[in-house]
Length: 250
Image 1 (cartoon, rainbow, N blue to C red):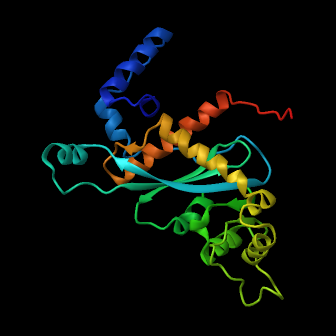
Image 2 (cartoon, rainbow, N blue to C red; image 1 turned 120 degrees about the vertical axis):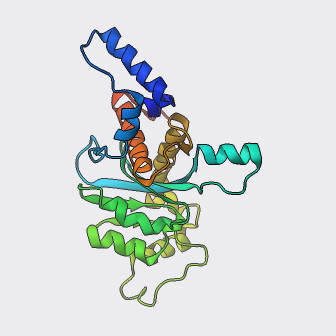
Image 3 (tube, rainbow, N blue to C red; image 1 turned 90 degrees about the vertical axis):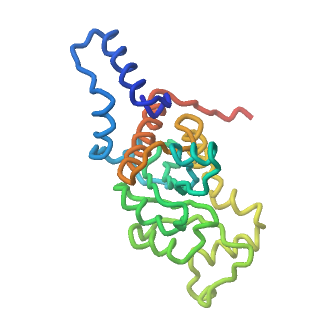
């Protein structure tokens, strides 16, 4: 409730206490100090999707600001010392839009370097791995192949990409993408390959920033990881409550 409504700890304590009273439950609400301490040791269950079968994994990342005393000092005193930002890596279900993997890192971390960490959070078999051009690296393909040998990797090659030395005899997935782009054009490849499905993970990031916000309020690595995990679980719960059903009529 604190994450969704953007409340301070004291406000959260009062809100939940009021809800418990309205429900007529004989429960005691932990005080705000307890809530603050609990974030450091809270263990959350892994994210799970509601669907079954092979997963079409969509991956993307976004930057998050750090709210708190650092930004306040810069605004008031013009201080040059401030806390650096963070990067949020998300893995989403291509069918339901649910967040199935989440990772918080420093902003200097390369996107492709965290592919393995996201994949390790998923227990379902993966049918495809779709990401933007930042993941156009050999290690992205290798990381997916190590865990899910038959998974398709949908990553657009760079505009300067050239086929590998074995493209004619044993083409890689990247080689086939380069060939398809040469035949269909860079604008036609996303539709023919299914890459357009990646729009769903961009929607998930937009939903995160609209509902949760674009800043982290925690001040340690442990509590930041807990904060983003709680936020992802809350967003998934909202999708469980109801989602739009789109039907093509023309």
